[in-house]
Length: 320
Image (cartoon, rainbow, N blue to C red; front, side):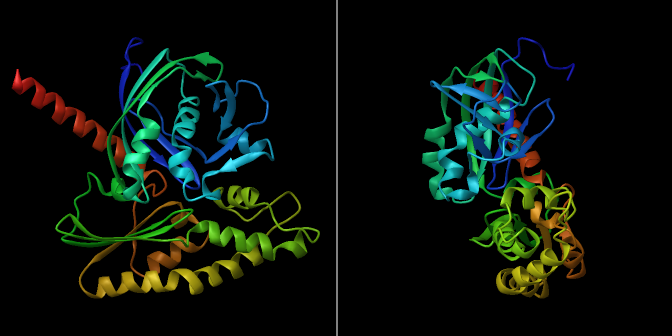
């Protein structure tokens, strides 16, 4: 990060405010990827701690570690929009302190009909305290694009392409022809459905109590099935994964395989690709799993923001 001047304020950035995790990639910095949890519990100035408009809250890992009193993006379909500024500031509070941030964002959204509302929530100038340090934050949304499209930016796309994005709240089915999107259908059958099922069916392992969805998510994201030191949910997970696939995903996967039969390449992105055992199933069916499927969308959003800024700069220079 030595190329970043201490007085630099303007940064291109990509923001993916997912149901399961928030991904913020600011040009010149490492990606911030944290759980989409917001806690209002009292705690120290940990990464993700924000004081804003007289309220204090924490976004991310510490909100999860606090154990309770948190709100998740996945709890409500509107949270991705309503909580967007809170989670953006919380993500910024994971980066090294700067007195001023002017973020020029490209943002992805599951439902682009909510674009104007999301822009109203995000655009503006704010004076939050981020992890204990006062900052001036200006947010300017350059573009809002459908979820998953960022992952394709910069790739040489085949003439015919179908993409499945296995997210937390939704599974997105998209088709492209000559690089132009034809279909973009979100199905409300994301990984959260699987996690809810596991939480109900692991009672016999958990003293008769339903499992904690956040703890289930954590272990699966870590690539294993150890719910706690004493509880391994491997058998329950395997059974629920098969049921989730048969009840919810098989129809969407079959649509994609029909597209493959019609000459499409089929790609998969999203955190769901990395569920234990699921990646192999997808690859067996002929899917190409994009590199780093969890952060691929955020990477593309940043590159899109940089391209827009470069184009705007070139245009304004030529106009002079």
